[in-house]
Image (cartoon, rainbow, N blue to C red; front, side):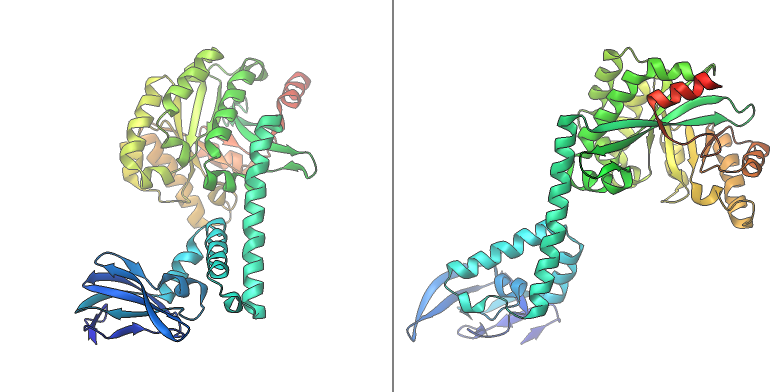
Amino acid sequence: MLDKLYREVFIGGQSVFCVGDVGDCAYLIEEGAVEIVASDQGREQRIGLLSKGELFGEIALIDRLPRTATVRALERTVLIPIHRKLVEELLEKSDPILRHLLLTILDRYRINQNHHDAMPTDALRTSQRNALKGEATQKLSLAHGITRALAQNEFELYYQPICNLADRRIAGFEALIRWHHPTDGLIPPMDFLWIAEQTGLIRELGLWTLERACQDWPELRLCTDYPAPFVSVNLSAVQLTGATLVDDVRSIIARHRMPPAQLKLELTETVMVEHPEVAEGILKRLMELGSHLALDDYGTGYSGLDHLQRYPIGTLKLDRAFIAPMLDAPQSLEIVRSSIELAHTLGMNVVAEGVETEAVSAKLAALGCEFGQGWLFGKPLPLSDNIARAQAR
């Protein structure tokens, strides 16, 4: 019998499901108790008792195979059903490695229970399992590769100039990581940073990037005669929730005698939305070290005004998605114009990303934007190439 659509109530002796039934639902016991009964050569044998707060029926639910036992209520029992559709939606959103591990454990459970004939055999199921296995293997291989690359010094920093739009002098650089893979060649960050974010390896990569940028800075700063030069290093949301981040940054700055005011830490709005209190505390402590903070990719995320007011941000970086079409799209131009005005009202300077033409650069300068970054001013290059480019000017 049904109670309010989201509970099922059974009386003592009533079966919740029987051997061979379709496993389309698991159950959480809210009240009462059930017994689990298995058949042994035609005779029933109780193999378990479950009571309030316990879960049953989950194996058949996940692996889509028939029930291997019968479950009966011992008394009036209230069950909360967990339907397959909900579980499939949750699994679909979960990491493929976790899904692969779960299904592998279930397969081995079936084998250990001597249900060899119950293993999935249809072509669709096999194809889905193989695809999932392939995705999981790829992620694990990539994560292992990042770990190896850190140990083997396969990463390198490229630096892209950030120019003052008024006089076109290089004011600073953004540090961008590249991976020199031993067999795949140069791998851009978009191809591996996502797995680093998901696995937590981004913490090690982030610290490596900061360490190398501070180590390179004495040479890199000679590539500009700007009175207040800087190097920008990206921080991920995962890094910004780490308990040791501030201490790590302090140690790296001290180790390389990096002038804190010449280090700019870039972050996105993600961490401010997901962990606002943690972010506020850590960002203030980073500011106390003497470094500056920049909000990256402004306009593509949440872009809440409360973020700009709440956090000690000194630089607003306008995303290339608005910069590139601004001369042809009135809406993009208005977004750029209003963002620059807002930043200045809040005491921030502005960096426009993705500047590729003289016309766009001139328009940004006319709007009061202080800095530009993009191929018009220079592509990301290794330290040695930046030095050579500066010497050639």
